[in-house]
Structures are given as structure tokens and as C-alpha cells.
Image 1 (cartoon, rainbow, N blue to C red):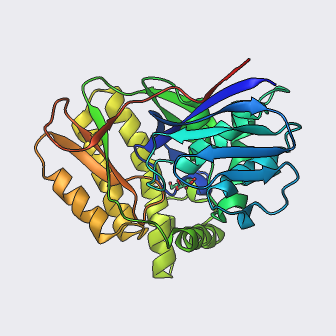
Image 2: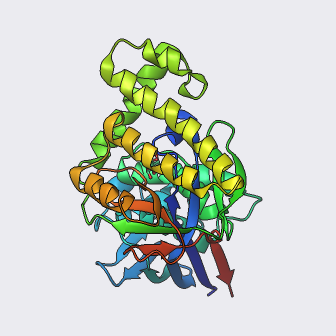
Length: 335
Ligand code: GLA
């Protein structure tokens, strides 16, 4: 039986949150923390042992991924249901990612399972696989997520973040300068309410777009004309966040890392006040980091409601936080 080992990184999003599912702009980077699936192909089930939980046992004809136990096995089942591989797999899963902390641990698992099952053949591009795995994640978790995490994990480039245009799905590598460090702090806050709240935010963006057209093309003046205050704030976040992503890319291209940091902090304020996906604990972390000499900017990263804060600092700044480096995307070895 063929041996296989697939490794898929998590990601940290530098700027551009809650924009992907509106066709907006995001700037994630794959990170060195990753999930590995290692085992032998064969059989009619995917059986994965984990050192964190009970094993996942998923038949190849699994029908309803969202009902599988233990819960982490739903992500395995989502991939199996989306890809219908011909062969099963028996092996182990290990991860160096914190789970459920806004660094795309579930996506890393899904990407690693998909690559291990050998579904990259038949000319499937990273983009096509990302779109299939976006549906797998939606089926597994019930969260109507965008495609940022899957693309970041599959298409990551060492030393670079990825500017993704979620309308065209064009991906442009953006070099991360050497004179800054990127770091994360885990708030330790669990994201129980995230599933419903995320879905509501997405619906609110759709309702705003029904009034002013695609938010990607909307101007602030259009948004100011939305009478309903919640929809107005949600749309204002998306429109200003898209502009901040472009301004951030321009700032780091010219070496203005102070401006880039300020844009991250402005992004946090927008996610806190207009999009309302922050929490008092995340706000306190961002405030403390922003007031630390050498820290250029800080913000919640990913879906919010808990999870991690990402910050940018001058190299060697004595501030606690796990340093993350822009890493290459997922890989698979066989034989
Ligand atoms: C989660 C989703 C992504 C994206 C972020 C918020 O990570 O999986 O698609 O919407 O939240 O930017």
C-alpha cells in the first residue's frame, strides 16, 4: 500500500478580514505552523488517529459530514464528501497549530487530508482545490466561509503574503519586508458564538449589497446613503477594509512599515466598531500591544469573536508573542 505524507500550513491574515465572501481583498500569509497527515492509502474508510482526541473514522460514502463524531472528524468527512476519493487512508494526524484560534487549523486539516488522499491529480489547480475545500469546510462546520484560508494554505509562498482579489481570485505574492516581525498572541478565548454570528454578518453584507450593489465597487458615499444603521456600519467596514488592504500593500512596498502598522490598528477599530466581531479581551490585547514601544500595529485576525491578535513589530522588540514567518504552501510526498 502506498505511503503518503501531506503537510498543510495554517495562515495568519495580515489585513482584510470579513471581506473575502463579499468579493473583496485579503492579505493572508501561510505560516510555518502546520498540520501533517501521514499514513497508508487503501481500504474503504479514512481512519485518522490524533494525539488530541478520539480517532476519526469516515466511510468513503459518508453522507452528512456535519453529524460525524468526534467533531474534528467532521472536517475529514467534509473533504471525503466533497472529493469522493477512490481509496481510503489509515494514518495519524499531528499539528503545531493552536486549534480554533483564528489561524485556520481546520483548513490546514482539510488541505492535508485532501492532498494525502491524492486528489490533486487530473490537473486540479490550487484554485480549483481551494474552491472545493471551501465547500467542504462549509459542509463540515455550517460556517458560510470565504475562500481565503484554503487559498492561503495551498498557494503560500515563502517570504511572501498573498494579495487575493476574491472577485477574480487572482493571487499576487507580496514580499514581507525583513525589517519587521509578524507575531500572534492567542487570546485563549473560545469562539462558541462564531458560527451563527459569522453567518449573520455575511447575510448583513448581502443585504447591504442588495441596496448599493457589490460592496467591492461601492464608494463610501453609497454606503453613507444606507438608512439602516447596522447595514451601513457593516458595509462601511468592508469598503474601508478593502482600501486598507491596498494601502497596506503600497506601504510595505515603499518600506513604510509604520504606515502599514497604523493600517492594521485602523482595521481593528473597524472590525470592533463597524463589524462588531471583536471582544473586550481582544480589544485589551490590541490596546496593550499598540502602546508597546517597537510595536507598529495590532489587530484581531480571522473571523474574530476570540482567537488570535496579529501584530507587526520592529525586529528584536521585547514583547511576548509567537513570531510567525511567511511560509510555503501545502506539500505531499508519496511512496
Ligand atoms: C474565517 C473564514 C474566512 C474569512 C475570515 C474572516 O477565517 O474561513 O473565509 O471570512 O474568517 O476574514
